[in-house]
Image (cartoon, rainbow, N blue to C red; front, side, top):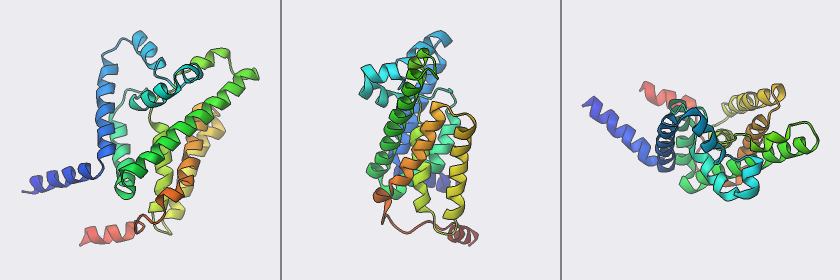
Length: 217
């Protein structure tokens, strides 16, 4: 009986965030496909779907869409966890259309900003010309944007702990590594925070203290 009740709750949770879990299913399928490729073919295959400078200059729309359905690391389970913790609550909170808008804005604008910075570095002689074909795929920019937008869902004073933690997690790699992907992640959280007009007035803020009290009985 408890198992059935638990399964119903899981099913209800998944149905309440359809975009999140359809995306996860697609990522599972593409990840399985990657594991069946030889390493050499995999790199060639992913590079054609990469939002690098070369592909963006020839097929910008195609690669911006395609790059969001592949995971370079080949590890799907961590993303299943992160999507459940961050994407699903934001989709439940904002609705699928607004959640998707945050994802698209973060993915597209962060990609264009980071690749634009890389192009300037190439022209200034800081980065090699071969960087125009860098491998740049994945879902992390959209995820970072959603993580930042979730700030507005959390009630104060908890929000004042969550936001600095997010800033530290995404700023430190940029300060230490200063890669174009680190820049993209940092830009993504700024975009997520700039999505306040999309999230304003979308219901009562979530208070962790109230949730804990309800769980205790």
